[in-house]
Amino acid sequence: MADTEIPEADGRASVAHDEPLVLGPASRRVLALVRIVVGVLWLSNLGWKTPPHFGVLRNYVRDAVDHPVFGPYAWLAEHVILRHFGPFAWMVLFVESLLAACLMLGLCTRLFGIIGAIQAAFIGLSVAFTPGEWPWSYYLMVAVHVVVVATAAGRTWGLDELLRPVLRARRSRLSALLLRCT
Image (cartoon, rainbow, N blue to C red; front, side, top):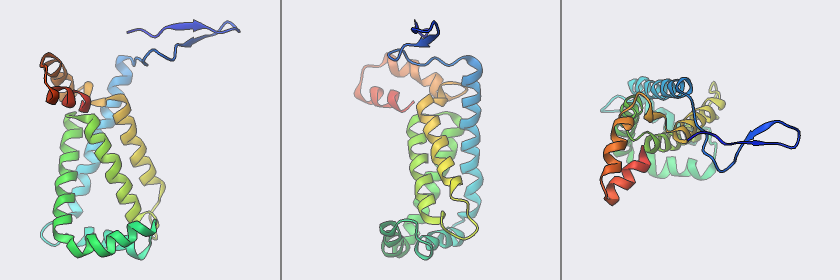
């Protein structure tokens, strides 16, 4: 669908607000590269979440208590997460591995973009005020995931591009739900 240009009173043209923004091939490729790089970011950060003790991850969760960003989250980290650290650590490893794989492959990109934004926000809540950390890195991590979600970055160079026609052809609630995730 092409953008509809509406002439302004001063003679300039603007895009109609009810028309979706259509990105050109170069923009879509750049967004696909951003999505892949974000997936590689998650993959590269798995190295310090090593089972069975997850020592570095435990230290980062401890930072949420020692250098609180948000009081209720610091309480949650101390009284829930650290007390049940083993299952929590395995869940983090699983979620971030899945995030890395799905973003790099462009699979259910919108869903995993949302999960990535939430995960980045929780990481920020844990370590943003730790000495030596740069809080803006966590804001940027959330923002880049929002871009991945908003632009459906898996529809170029991703499995979402291949899945969408198949999901559209099926008439089920599950297909409709999965279509929204792509």
